Length: 140
Image 1 (cartoon, rainbow, N blue to C red):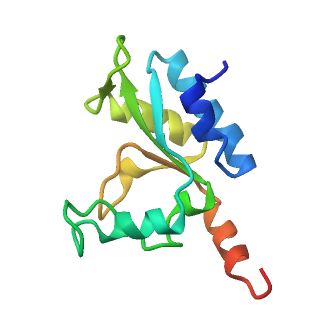
Image 2: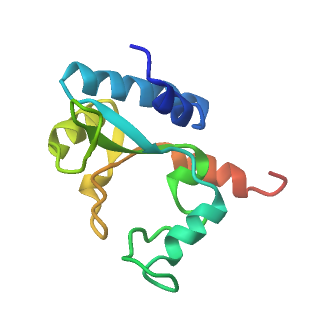
């Protein structure tokens, strides 16, 4: 399965080993009848800081507990998705448990199982913390 231009652009921002896993996830979801749009892939530290500030020092609800450098997105190891209707509109009320199970079957960590802030659209590579450790190692 080839991705549409929007999904391909966002998946191409990811850490290379995670790109293949993200593509496999999207393909499996499509096979199961779930058309998804990747809403976010890699997130810069500045973008993470703005998101973390939301609900704290900036308007809006709190949506993350991850400070800059603490999110899998900062290492190109997470995607957020939304369901697409037949006419291409975002549907945030899709069958999250169905795609959560698909992601977990492929070895992804699903944000729908997070304990503090449940994040159903979020899927991350289980090994992203290894990238964080390498990035913070002396001489990195």
